[in-house]
Length: 231
Figure 1 (cartoon, rainbow, N blue to C red):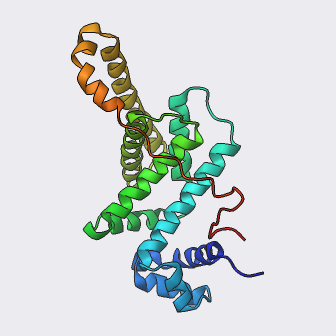
Figure 2 (figure 1 turned 135 degrees about the vertical axis):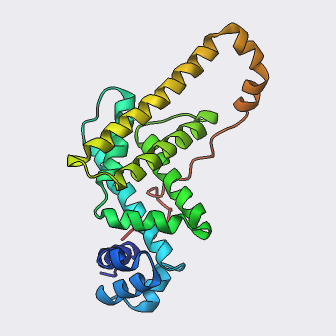
Figure 3 (figure 1 turned 60 degrees about the horizontal axis):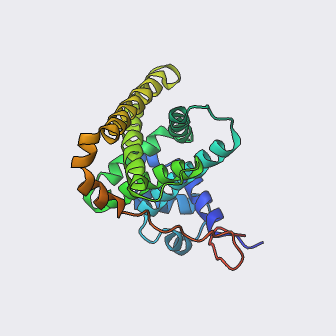
């Protein structure tokens, strides 16, 4: 059977994780991974046209996929805020190598890769909301993802320095961040319920109502759709 692009990426990632702690997400790591995985150098470059940054993004995508699979297979808490907390925790627990994430934060802190890092984090937040059944189509689509991206980013940074047993300090930090967000939502609800403030905000609210979520991409599993990850 012909090897798929996804299989090649997975092989490169598995081999790369042995080198990332020493060489970071670099071309040296990509070249070593290609050699160790017995993948032709030209094929490795075709899979990762921009070099190791594409490999780092593939590692992030692998973690997102593991998180989504776990969200779909496990029984989740009843409260929605607890579902969000579980999703962020699942995403962090999907990490197979903390040093790979540490090196990734260094890579995506560079100006030339900052946009890629921000897009990856936004994608994680988007997958969480989509998997949990978010149906918003207005400005809330953006605010939910922006807020969650902030919570996720802060929690990951805290986790990178956490040496507590079973990451208990990280999970407590995550709960505090989500509680902070819930307080913001409570204030927003109070503003909506206040007739005077609602009147004063009629204009801004009308403007915000004109903001719509981006159109959904077609389902790649539908007949006639092509995906590079399919066998």
